[in-house]
Amino acid sequence: MAKQQDFAYYLTNYLTVYLSGTKNFSIHTIHSYRDAFKLLLKYCEEELQLSAGKLRLHMITPEMISGFIQWLKNSRGNSDATANQRLAVIHAFFKYLQSREPQFLLQCQQILAVERARSPKPAVGFLSVSELQLIFDQIDESTLNGRRDATLLRLLYDSAASVQELCDLRVRDVFLDNNPHILLHGKGNKSRYVLIVTDVAKRVSAYISENHLNRPEAMDMPIFFNQQHKKLTRAGVSYIVEKYASTAHIQSPYVPQKVTPHIFRHTKAMHLCQAGIDMIYIRDTLGHTDLATTEIYAKLNIELLRDALEDAYPELPSHGLPDWKEDNALMAMLDSL
Image 1 (cartoon, rainbow, N blue to C red):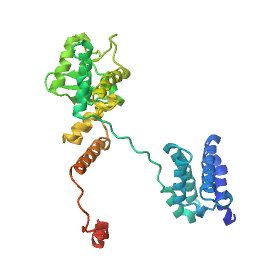
Image 2: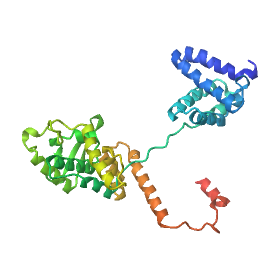
Image 3: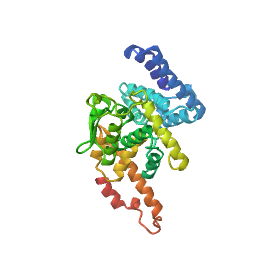
């Protein structure tokens, strides 16, 4: 094989021999791989003025691949997911190459280290105490439906239940005598007990009595039901939340225009975190299996505290202060840790 033909040789062998023969990939998958490399060649021609016939393996650098990913997103309007699919194809090729041609090992490892495109995670939406109270204030509790909605929304918040967990809640899952709590049934047949505050427990108790749910034959009935006495659906709970939230938004623009039942769950978690409650308890209340999932609330709370501090205090003057980055002794100490 001539050196100047190395890229063409390896790519041809990869697509026509390895993928179809060794890996037994379908023709559609091979076409997908082929299309990714066609786009890479198009990028090289249009952006780098490097024709396909002149492209050599040593010219393919991590910087080129990173630029290719950005070109897919910016010039072709590809989503992060699509760009990552193209990158996965390129990574697969260089994994194949490094195991067969050791002379390209370092180059392959550098290209394999090119990171996937990452979409910014959406901020966790939650309500302040005053915003939450304003939503509660929109409920007309002089009516039967209003009392149901008031109980539902307060229990949704206080228990941090998911909307489906609230819909599935039965009379037998509510314990109001000593140390009030409810039994929530989550995904994967996992159940958890969640404490509820006294005020909410009193509301639930009054609601159960008013709707004659305290009879033995009613133990398996859903706590919350519609006019047909059927269990409320997720859509039904969402409608109730949106109904009162939209009215609250008219009164105060600080209340988000779009409030979902899940925001009540985020709100409870953030309020617990802001109150200094241990993350282990918050994790158990939310039913998370991994503490790392719960820690997003702690991180968000720290960001809110930092913003508040920055607003409250002026920046310290930097003139005359030492630059620790230029302190070689300090940097050496940090490197040794």
